[in-house]
Image 1 (cartoon, rainbow, N blue to C red):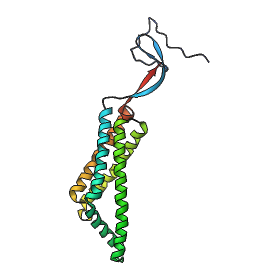
Image 2: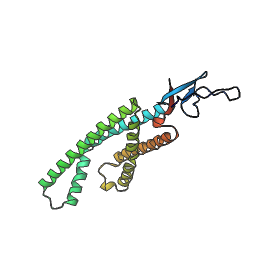
Image 3: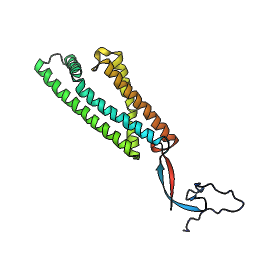
Image 4: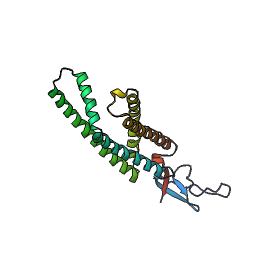
Length: 205
């Protein structure tokens, strides 16, 4: 098989622009000659760093908020859990209720701490790295925040059944709305530009 040859530039053909890629995608014009393309890489655009910073901020703030909710509103969560246990199991003795409550709260607090650490870690990585897989992980997690938005709206509609005070529910709802909005921006950027709003740039030999 013969080696691929660069396109010929004749006097009758239009002079290519610097950085123009040949029709076959194998060469790029550097202003003087066609150079073979060895691969492609993602180059940041004016959206890239603001997007990374926004994603990082949302994840880190959500991580901090998980800790605040787990320990700052422990009493409110405990009261809500007691009501739920009593409604679902009215025949339990006080000792059985307390035991079930302690197990449930320990699991809930442990899970929230895990989420907090995970969110902060994802936030830091999103700020300093532009890994493609991380972009999609961020997009999915932030997009799933729509369920938190629906849950927050339901809690506001039924404050008596909510585990948190109204102002805390509003804070959580606001964070979820921001996260979903950011997911929409990321999706638009992926369609219009690329991963992390970057563009594919050819690498020449």
